[in-house]
Image (cartoon, rainbow, N blue to C red; front, side):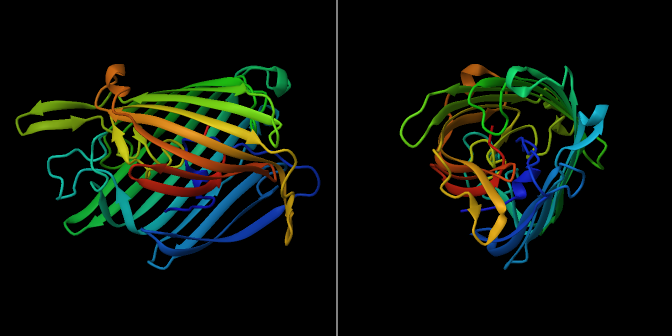
Length: 393
């Protein structure tokens, strides 16, 4: 079991939508605790506020320490207005931590000398675990490509997202330190026809993402990935306790064209391969949520998901009694199913067979202009419980 509150704001695979709330700027700080196989017992503090960085901007952050010596901090700066009357925005995200039992699904486990770690048919025990560091920084620039002044309810929005990124992860093994580093730029063009960001009842979104690591990090191999994300939202009417029911669908696929094997006098050499946690990966906070982060990683991937979201009639809790600053807008109950797999090549006939899967239940709430969610997901390799910010898609 793994429960991480607030640290998912560092996960670049998802969107965190925030909006300023009416009234005085607010500040919220909440203690939390969780247990996990890799952590022992952990205690932390998470929170956020409005106007901490700029007027009307909602920012989030969290930090925790554990009984086995692990610690981590994370922060999400919100959408900070920059140019064009504030329409061009900067969205900074960071996470940093020292992990006593960091786990990575890459080759190196002596018990699996003839198996590719992270491949679709790999063993769940084929990972490397050691003490190490993990640091992650992104600065996402959001640039509207059409008239940003139109009301969201009747407009299709075109947007360009430019994201310089950096991440370094180390594993301090007995035979020496293994280090993964990557830095580069992600370019994403998207068409967004959702009338609402926090609780879309209808509409769709299409996003094409080109990610390039130019080899700027010391020892890093340049690589490129291309991804396509298609989302749709279908209204299902109302019934009983749920006046608004929505079927949310997601199709995501990615390929790493630079990944190749070159024959040399010394033997085959792999070139253009991203670190195991980048590119075509499944598992973690948003895709195949029952599995650990990057549990599956290869050259290509396909992912399909469906969520049935039922918005409750009224609010079972409109504020936290001992913290009146925390106010709830709406609540949702969610059921979801996910399918996906990775493969060494992008071939549809391969990507739709022997699929990994999971099923789950979740609770969502709009809290001070931020969507918070708690998901329980189960698969044949186990189950997870995660609490974090933002819809999965």
